[in-house]
Length: 216
Image (tube, rainbow, N blue to C red; front, top):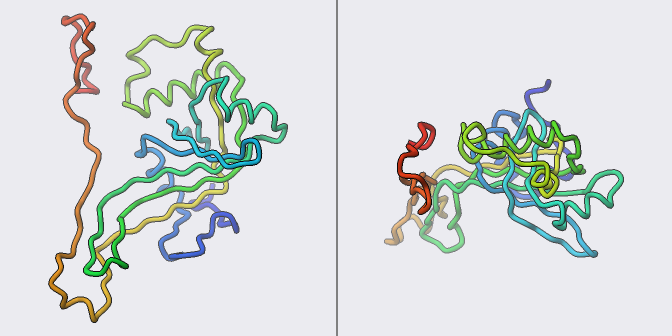
């Protein structure tokens, strides 16, 4: 397998092309770290963008949903698959410049385009749901009850092959114009990161149930 995805007109940015990368490892790392993605598709002639959870298994991105939800119903009606655009973004820092024009954000993002299909095969569906659980927290799939047949039937999963994919990354300090660098306005970075807090047990949890190692 190639170490990079092949650029297409739909995955080639029109601005800041130097920030784009098609490296598979970079794309996988962003998708694996992001906890939420956004699924865009057309519905009733207009665009719809929905936040959802996802998980990557090799070169397939699985998207969680409901069998009665809009994306699933639209995908059922699309014989060749539902054309979608999936994005995931990680924000690493706020970039504060001396001029309003050059304020920015340090980020890592992925855009994936293609035809998503409904996962009907029970084995693949269960594998995808386990991956979605482990994406929330590694080890969680082995530490909860798996869906019943009825629950499995009510849960929808879309699968998108990772083929038309690109990542975009912005790093570094603010880039002020030379004539602004002497201005006495604070400039620099405000780092941001998502960190888990201490686990909070449910009010009805048996006090004898310990916090699992993967949450400690």
